[in-house]
Length: 318
Image 1 (cartoon, rainbow, N blue to C red):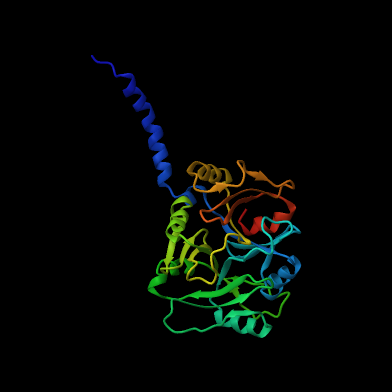
Image 2 (tube, rainbow, N blue to C red):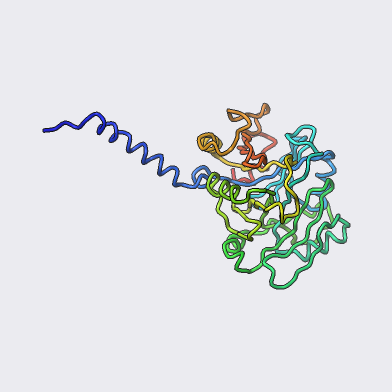
C-alpha cells in the first residue's frame, strides 16, 4: 500500500479553504455585507440657511440633528446630510461636482410650486414626448444642482422601472412651507462625474457589487439601496466637468461595517483614509472613509443607539 505524500495531504487540507474563499468572492459584496441606505454629504458655508431651504422650501424630514451636520430623509432609503463646511472633510469653496436627482411621479406639481417660489432654475422643464426621462434642474442656496426627475416607460429604463414601481412615495412635510398636498419623492440618484467611465463602472459593479440598472451610453445608474442609486456620468457629456476636488462625500449606511472594511482592505480597490474603523467620540456612529479610483470620498457608516439617533434609527428600521 502506498501512503499519500505530504504534498497531497497539504493540497487536500487547503482545498476547502480555497473553495470557501472562491464561494465568498462569487457573492456580490452588496449582497454579502448589505447596504441599508444611501446618503450624500453636501458642505455649506451657511448651514442654517441650507437647512431652511431643504426642510422649509422642500419639506424634507430632519432625521437627526448633530448641530454641525443635519441628516435629512429624502426617500425610503435615501438620505442627504448637510454639513457645516468648517467642521467637515470638504470646504464650501470646493467645486460642487455632483448633482442629486430627486425621483418623483409629481414632476408637474414640483415644477409649478418651485417656479412660483422663485427657486433658482438651472435647466427648465421641457417634457418632450418619447424621451426616457423628463425633468428640470434647480440650484440650492449655495449652488448644488438638484434634478427633479421622472424616468418614463422606455426600453432604456426596462431594468429600473420595475424597481421604482415597487417603491412608495415618501411625502414631504408641509408644516414649514406652503407645499401643495401629495408631493414627495420615490428615490434618489447621486450623479458623479468621471473621466474613465469603464473603470468606474467596473468599480461600482464588481468591487462594491452594485447592480447596473440603466445604461444611457454616457451615464449609468447603479442600485445601492432600494431607493438609493449612484450615477456615474461621463464628464464630457454631463452637467459638470471633472474636477480634482469635490465638495461631496458618497455614503453607504450598513449593518456590517467590519465586513465592508475587511473586503475593501483585502481587495485594495479603495484607498482607505485610516487603517482602522473610526468611532465617534460621542457614540453616535462608527465609520470609515476611502477614495474611489478618481478621488471621490466614500464613507461607510453604522449609526448607534443614541438620543440624537432615535428618529434616524426608526426610519432605518432599527
